Amino acid sequence: MFRSFFLKLLAFLASGVASAVIDLTCFALLFHWILPHLPLPRLIVSVALARVISCVFNYLVNRNCVFGSPKGGKMDLLSFGQYLLLAAGILAGSYYGTRFAMYLLPAAEPTFLKMAVDVFLFLVSFSLQKRVIFASRRKKEEVKR
Image (cartoon, rainbow, N blue to C red):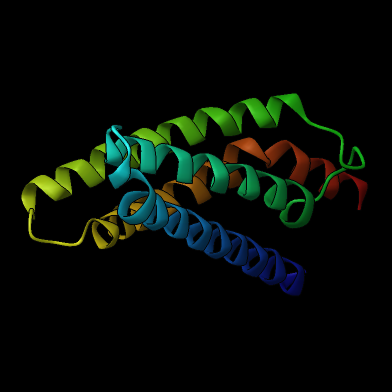
């Protein structure tokens, strides 16, 4: 029982780390190399595109690998809808948090500021996914045992 919990926690952490690497890599590529050459608002576009890519990856890994999928991989519309709402909130938090940090520390590297903001948002996401989004799936698994 303890081993199962520990393995799930490690899987969630690994999923989060992989998503963060994908998010920060996409953000850095967009912010520093791709978007400076385009007439677009760099910060919001970089944050949004990076978050969309990492969000899809994270949902699929958490649903199918971390919390399991009782429907054989079919889309669970309730959890996906909840996850999209969480992702939208985290997107806004990442953008406004990074923007505020850039205002407070204008000489600091934006990627590092975003990383600090996203550590806090990771903890919020973990709590909500565990207690709300994938809670019914976890309860169904416990009833079957």
